[in-house]
Amino acid sequence: MNAKVGLAMTSFLTAASATVAAGAVEPCHSGAAEDPPRFLLVAAANSSARDKAAADFVCTGKNDERFFNEAISRLRFGGTLKMADGDYFFDAFDEEGDTAVLFGFNDGDARTINFEGTTENKSYNTRHGVSIHVTKAAVEAARGGGPKFVFRGTEKRPPSRGAFFSMTHVNNVNFANFYLFLHDASAPICGISGNGFGSMFLSQIGIYTEKYFDDRFLHRKPATPAKGSVGVISLHNSNDEMARIGYDFVNVGGLHTGFLFQGVDHLVLRDCSAARCCYGYRTTGRAAKTLTMINCCDEGNAHLPFFGGTGHLTAIDFNIERFNAAFIPDSPDNTGPWAVEETPGDWHGFISYTMQGEAFGLKKFWKDGCGINFRTENLNHSRMERPDCPEFLETYFDRATGRTLTWDGSRWVDALGRPADEGAKD
Image (cartoon, rainbow, N blue to C red; front, side):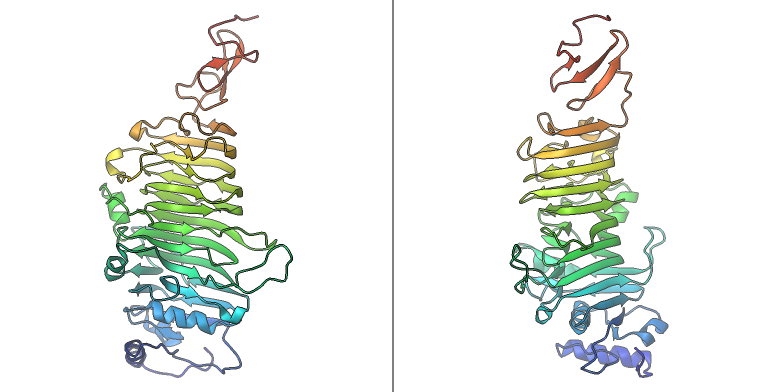
């Protein structure tokens, strides 16, 4: 950056186009080989002239994933990859494991990379900042095959010094401040996969289909998403003490699954949302130890969360919205609109929720027989009136008999186990 050469904007574009055509990418400014950079700026083809003049890489709007892969490979000791405001276009999944942008093995050396936009994105009507687009050609090429990944770390891992854990991942990545748009959700493509990271923190990120905002605000029914189209896949686990593992203000829309959790450990979500997906939230695989969700939203999805595997969840102020079934995507699954446990009783925890709307006849959180080891609290219910769709072990005070009654899954009973229509006020 400090040694940049004053080249005209057209020179940048010409040089960048030539390197892409040749199958290689070179930075606009080169540093000494023995002194890898700690900060790199990438500009889009439609970034401002000022940003292009300051950038280390200027993308062309075609196969921009190559510029990102080259930039990441140059951050040998970690650092920040900053994206200037603009639109970036990914056309292929050519890296290891069918990945567009790969955080590679780095000779087995650990590093932390901050991958972030320069401006916080806003909303549909005031969109600005960084938008990354997975193009129509890329999505069409991904149909009918195995899963593809936009961002992922290498599966290769060096031996660990610890006696308990035999392997560890080398890349620790913090993603922030950008939109990621898939042309559509017709192929099994994951936006961000944490499988190959030692830690992963997400902040101010939106992952959507290109038509998501129009479908939502113009009240259109989204196309049925393909299974395997996923916004975020979590780390498989982490016991690395100080590792940053969390999602803040992450939003997913229009895919089959918003957030997929695989054996998470101490993962915290704050103010995250999934909308107009088949599933906003799914868990799978081995035990999830302490998944925590604070003020998260499940809006206009075909199903409430699906709990596969085993684990413990604390969900505080979980907001559910189901206003109109005509604007919710059709789902290829038949689990019903309620939250479902793959094996009832395998999950434990606490959920407090609010519910707006009754699309699909949704009036409570759990499917009958599920959630028996949760304390589930419907914040819309009055504690002085009998709820018409109670959760397991929900209580209310019956003023007619002077008793606190509890729903046992099939009927209301008092503290002595007597049905609500038996016994009288003492």
